[in-house]
Length: 171
Image: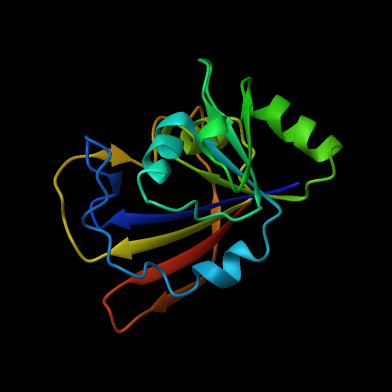
């Protein structure tokens, strides 16, 4: 199973402000996102990320299956035009279960969720876009790990907007 993290971060490493605000991210996002999302067959997000996405107005994932991870109940019925399912459990259980259902490439999003999948050693690829802004504090992409995680640099792409995307595989 391929498990990819695709994230936009402030230069000081934050996914969002402490209040989950994303106002520092540029309109239009990463120009490579559409090509990336076309390679994915399911999305795994945390509850807080799910709640943030609901504030965007329209559901951005279309009919792509989305699995919302939370140990507490989540009302996924609020998404009328998408395929959304609530899941709980350890990352390895989630990956195994989704693999049995035929999924082969997961996009994992959300600070705590990404950290849990990294700690479990399940992330196979990281695509990180740095936004040229320092916000000082917020929700970090990375957290404590039980051991070093070695990465292999694949490529770095700068954009005229000041965004810089770097891709790594996890060795």
